Amino acid sequence: HVFSSTLRAHTVTVLFILTCALVYVTLLEETPQDTAYNTKRGIVASILVFLCFGVTQAKDGPFTRPHPAYWRFWLCVTVVYELFLIFILFQTVHDGRQFMKYIDPKLGVPLPERDYGGNCLIYDPGNTTDPFHNIWDKMDGFVPAHFLGWYIKTLMIRDWWMCMIISVMFEFLEYSLEHQLPNFSECWWDHWIMDVLVCNGLGIYCGMKTLAWLSMKPYQWQGLWNIPTYKGKIKRIAFQFTPYSWVKFEWKPASNLRRWLAVLGIIFMFLLAELNTFYLKFVLWMPPEHYLVLLRLVFFVNVGGVAMREIYDFMDDPKFHKKLGQQAWLVAAITVTEFLIVVKYDPNTIMLPIPFFITQCWLLGILLIFIWTLWRFFIRDITLRYKETRRRKQEVSADRERPQGNGSTATPSGRSKLNGSSETLRQRKT
Image (cartoon, rainbow, N blue to C red; front, side, top):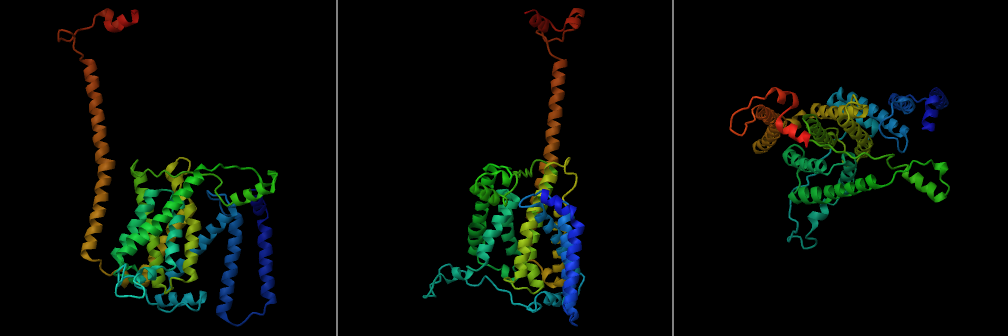
């Protein structure tokens, strides 16, 4: 915190030194006549100045480890990425794809999509050399990526049920959209065994074990220079990359309508962001192994955790957190902007009609969710309130018309009016 305050106090000095360094380098270097090169260099320098200003002056988020400046940096990167997406959105399809060549000259070329379906035999007797070749063909870089991705998503969401629902729902989306993207076409065992059970399931399991360790481990806030031993100092430095404190997420989606709709919105945005990963590289002609695809995943790893914490704080304590956090708004805007780019750049693929039986399944699922919502938060609550009101009225009527021994209603005398009923008076005397 002292380092952060020092940075904020010397913001003008830092920005002035950075600007002077950029000007000095520009004056020393002979400026080429290549307009594209000069434009790229100017954009990079402008982004660096903005990042430097944001790291020192942006608002702090909910995380403080390893340092608040680290999370302020990713907040500024989020703004830059959203501006880049808006710029791409307002280009023509040809110009937008060719613009990617300024980032990497290898881009801007249509790429064939890989089909993971085809021969789905786990044991192929026709191949005497390697009967299990179908399994080994699926063992590519996406296997550890699936495991690591779901491990990190579990650390973000911190709930086993939500993670499993998102994992299974995405497999259903792949089934539903395989007529649009060929690489969604996978074998059944690739969907449910390798993805859901092995990669995703193992990642979720390891993530839940890590969450249990983080919730049980002791948190010590002793300063580095107050630790006497070198071993303790090294351990303290390693723990600097763990959370400062721990908050267990209890989403409780069935507790009230607000939380239920919020959980549905979180699941929807997660699934949309997952689909954007595949559709963006399809419409912008980026190979799956390109470093920009990996950078986008690293970006969402860093900003997604902050966004989920801000959403949970806003849901759990709206009196203290009166508005949704800035990172959550930006992540939602980025997800929607990416989807708009996909719709604009390849509307023909998006508008390919979904098979009728798949449409029926999705409509049935949406109808069941809608009916359950009506029953749980409207019909059930109205029925319970009506029964409670009726029960109270019956109790009041029974108290007013309590029958005596001969079956008639006795009129209280003046003494009983003053002293209460005879039974109460007898108990009082006793």
